[in-house]
Length: 193
Image 1 (tube, rainbow, N blue to C red):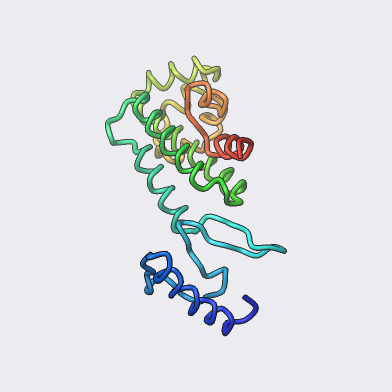
Image 2: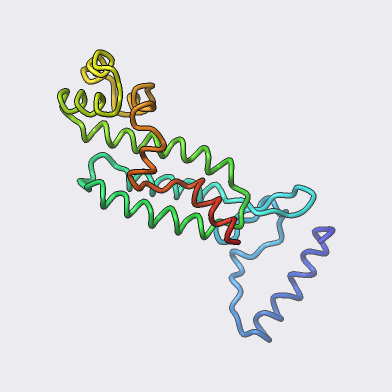
């Protein structure tokens, strides 16, 4: 609508139609006349760029991140197969629900964070120095450098962002292991749409 008065008038005529003709109940607490940027609807929010476009509401993004944080928890006792399957189901479902939104940059940023979480899980699983040394050398890191990092006392989250894990547990290796990424799911969902 062009003005707030016109929007209030439109809402005043829509509510009786929806309740009287369609026999649906309108939630008056959630229904409001508001500017498009202030509206949240089914996890989506809106913005104007020559036309009204969809994006994911911040609360939905926070929920998604907390769910991925829960699924990639270092201490939930899951094996890699169970974690992989749970992540695949959640990410595929979430992306397919929100595929209408403009979210490519959000997916790229979230993937970086998500891959770091996965590397942290692997580092935690490799607990002992000997195991870390063996796995790093198996993944192509020079033995002296692998020994240096295997003996580190830095925290899991810090090491997950280090050069050593980025070059050994690469994005391609994570894909080959069967992990699904948000960007790939998003691009596939957009192609099918």
